[in-house]
Amino acid sequence: MPYKADHAFSLLTRARDLGRLGHAYLITGPREARLEDFAARTLGLVSQARHEVLDDWAQEGAVILRPQSKSRRISVGEHADEPGSMRYLERMIHRTVTPGQHKMGVLVDAERMTTQAQNAFLKTLEEPPARTLLLLLSSHPEQLLTTILSRVIEMPLMPPAGVREFDEHEQKLLAVLAQIASRSTGSIGAALGLKTDFQAVLEEMKEGIEEEIEGEFEKEQEHYAQTTDGAWLKQREEEVSARIQATYLHRRDSLMDLLLAWMGDVARIQAGAPNLDLPDYRAHTGRLASQWTPETVMKRLRALRQLEQHLHTNVNEGLALEVAFIQAFGR
Image 1 (tube, rainbow, N blue to C red):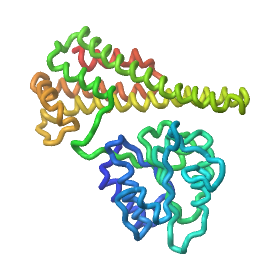
Image 2: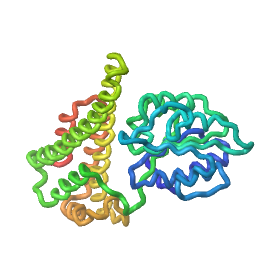
Image 3: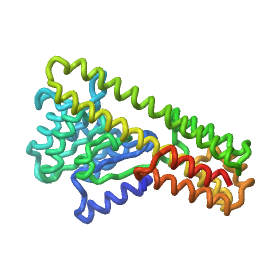
């Protein structure tokens, strides 16, 4: 469950005061959640210094890694003196510091680490030096190795109210949902029409993910074609396939969250709640709140929540969508 930034910070502060602050945290959330601002604030838990801008922490000895070059990747690096590389981070984290000081490292867009960089980073996660605080910032944590995910404490953040932005696929889903109030609902045909529109957004999204990740892989192939063997290529093909699937599932979850937020706003309006997840769409959800009974809205919410659960199993996606949309909008 995502936290508001102030609540998440209070949890970390309490952990520090109790002597239970972890050595590695994965700070996740959409871009509007301002992960870098939260990281800058968090570093202040182990330092007397205070900086609102993350990069300003470099003057306190913190190592800030960001994706480099045109490929926007965090690489292992050729040597330990190469700033911005994983080897540089490892050297700086293992350096000797003044007693009482913490060693601090932040990986911005951590999912942009190459597989080699992630494997190298595992060594630091498994055996971190004393008084170390590592922060991984990521809007797509599903692209990280499971071995890394198992060794960090995730702190998911939600964006501040009223500042959420939507990517192109979320905007298309919102456009579909905005039409519900003017459509005829309550029939199998209408429900299947909504399901078709939703599935079209999913398919377009997956095609975009495949194009982006496979394009990066093609550039990587050109670079390593003359220096690696077929075993490397096969391994990377499997990794790319897994990354495409993981990215798709993560973004599909985001669309499901949006669908649930929309239906949840209908229920909130009926209950007279002052705050909505999607305040800019109040006119649309308000019309549905006036058209549907509270019992109907609860039934629709239950169907969508069940769909969300089913999509985390091995169920056939198309069949799960069809059954759920009929249950949610076909009666």
